[in-house]
Length: 268
Image (cartoon, rainbow, N blue to C red; front, side, top):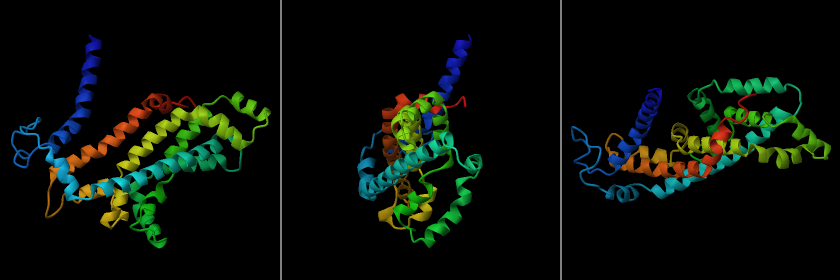
């Protein structure tokens, strides 16, 4: 009996998770006259594939994709690199105020991103990076959660491995690069997925920083399809479906590391 209850709960969870995606897909394939029918239809009466080609004609979608890809790749590379360095130092190196720095990093996780938007934008204006892709990337090239995750991953590595490397004459950099990093691949894959999703789907900060259409990210560009004088929900839904595809691809490529990385170091 309990087995069926568990299956029922899992099925309910799947339905709740999948329904918004199916509704988005359905909307992206509906015609204008079917969009506001009541009762609404899940499966379109007529599949309007022209919504996707119409989206490409309505906005410079290719430019939006390129800008988003550039921002995401740079954010992922820098975040993973810097968090690996900081995480290794906090886990394995001994220096003054180490614990204080770690507690400050953990405390930063309690500050909502929306709270620091205004001071960050003031800084971006002063260094002349407003309406620039670099201004989108720079403030978030590393964050406290990434450092915390990598620290836990390095702490989960047995001390004996580090001691063996030191006895073999490995310098701190060699120990980090050739011994420790290969053992934290699952966590790095998990961090890559999290950073990719956060950067790819970010809307608020790019909306604040970017002003010129040629610099818009995908999310900011699509938002301008809904406004005071235009409401093209079909095109927005089509753009939403297209924007989900890269996230799915990245997750599929790295899913074999995801579960191991997610729980790496959880016991420390």
